[in-house]
Length: 65
Image 1: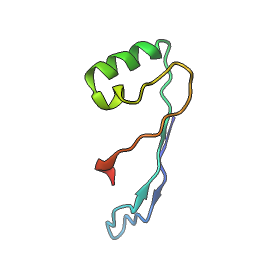
Image 2: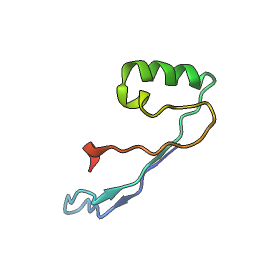
Image 3: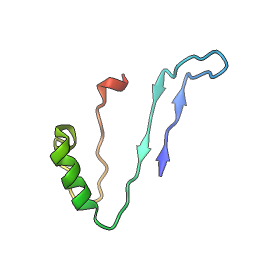
Image 4: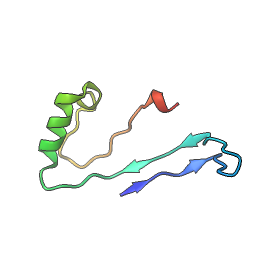
């Protein structure tokens, strides 16, 4: 599932969005193994301290600001 609402975007005038909110849901049989592999490759993902409890984590992505 991916939900990405854009605010302030106008395709006709090629105006970029003023804000973007997104929700991403990843589901798989062995999600813990995927999270472990991703954490080994990315310090940003490792810093999230993902747990197999299903709780959502907020992401601070300054490159999108």
